[in-house]
Amino acid sequence: MADNEINEQQERNEGGNGWLTGLLVAGVAVGAAALTNAFIFYKTPPLTSKLAGGEVRYFPTADGDVFYKKAGDGPPLLLVHGIGAGSSSYEWKEVWDSLTEKYTVYAVDLLGFGKSDKPDMSYTAEKYVAFLDDFCRRVIKVGEGRGECDVIATSLSAAYVIALSARDPLLFRRLVLVCPTGIEDLAAPPSDRAEIGRTLLSAPVLGTTIYNAISSKAGIRKYMTSRLFAKPATATDEMVDQYHTAAHQPGGENALPSFLSGLLNICIAEEWTKVVDLPLLVWGRDSVETPVGQAEPFLLANPQAKLEVIEDAGMLPHVENPEAFLAAVRPFLAESDGEPGGADTMGSEFGEETESVGADAVPA
Image 1: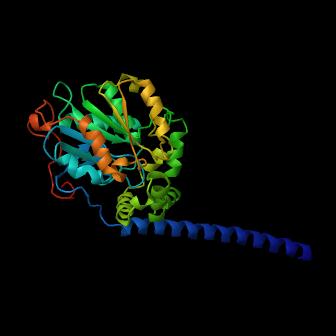
Image 2: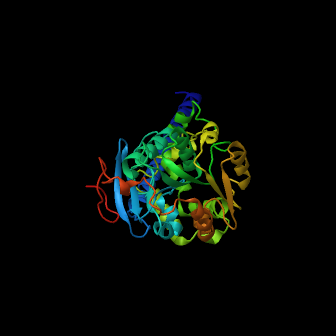
Image 3: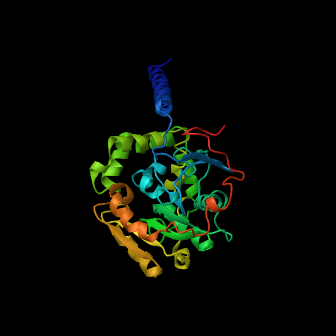
């Protein structure tokens, strides 16, 4: 064989070996990432609710069981946490005891979050609106002439409450909306590419690796101190641990791709003008993620609305300045005056729902 033919053969062999080596390295990297992702979820302990006292219950839906806690006595009050990695009803910990002194409080973990089931599916705004509607009717027993409940909801969840209130004015008596979105911010409806984006972000290795980076303890702390709270010291080790644990329950990575791809966006500009349930907007003065200036379009579009601005607080004033939050909210909510409506006036709370199963257990 001629020397030039030998050299060409060697180059082809080296090229083939280089391609094979690259493939093997990529395979090892993917395998290592998959093992790391699995280990992070494996070593995370089960999530325990930090809301003191009350009854632990689960509400079955077509997509899975939804965890909620019920405590207190008085007019019914629904608490709905915001959307984000590690979000759960833990968000209400600082105001839970005070609220349960005067109200029958229901704090839910939305599907895909906290202690609720987290199916691998496409999460949408309409699914959450439909869930809140169903929960109010079947668990709290309001609507359809049976009375109303008050509700406190945060951020994107507040937009879902607005949509539901406009569609059925008989469900809610008072709306307390904490840094709501949906008129300008996050108001664009999901695009045709949203489902494609969700699919890519849900890829078993790539998507989970991105999720674990976002929801690492360092990532959670950075977001809290730079975007969520006005006072970095609010992000305690216990809080970061709770969010991290909630984010890494089995299936914890399944809902966030829908949020990041825009599937959870909802425009409530028209619905907001129809809300007559005396809505109260509560904003942290120093909110970065949803600046207090975003309250103006809400006030202009609905003259029924009232604004309370909480000093020394960011996006979650009920976490960061609970005393001021309660002082602003209490006069607005229903008093324990025997008003009709609510689960306590309607007999058994459960129709098809599962029964209470004890502290932080799972349904049988």
